[in-house]
Length: 304
Image (cartoon, rainbow, N blue to C red):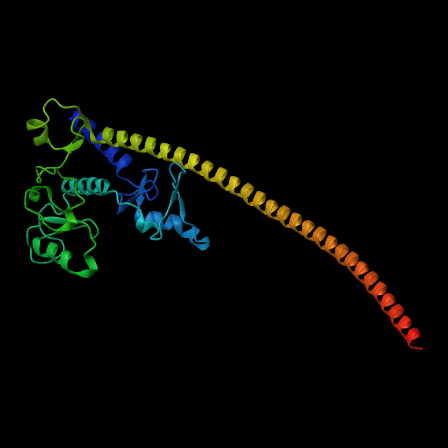
């Protein structure tokens, strides 16, 4: 009994540490993942961002690690869903429902037909029979609700996309994944472990998640370094372009000044040459006038 109580205590602590939103301290509802890989309820993130909407902020600060996440034009809704966390929460809530005896009679809580419950809606917090489950798929008001099969019905074939976020084995669809195979780099269920991965390097999901986080963080760190190098290259390019523009402007100014100086010199020389030519011209005209007058005078004297 003591071992059982200790195991239950450990499970309760796991739920509290991993399946509860640190903002509202309740089970995650539609968890969204920030760039730092911390997850929070969609509604909690919306309320966290609400005071920032006055300045049209596109950044959201993580309450856990204070890292910033840049939001897309879709805002908080555009953040990636944490489907694995949603599935773990659904599983835990289903187990609690069975443990506490809620709906222990196995009857649907959404209708009065007394039908056997086969699913549970995590939004309505009701056990559902097949007909009510169908209604959740068809009625627009509740189409977005998260509906999961009860454990004893999970072997049934489920085609509705509402269950796509439940982490199942891709080979054995009626089984949930429980470990990560480092050898094959994929999630595996108990059947896979027995028949396909008997001597492979297997680790727990939390360890695999931490390993993935570390790898992703290393990649993000390298991206940040690359961004820094790229930004520095852009800065140097801009600086070189600015220097080139200044040098070009100064060169054009020097060329224009040189051309203006040369034009001024040529113009001045032309004026001087024109002046000299005019002086010579006038001297020759004067001489010719004198000679002409002298000839006319002599001709007149002879005629007398």
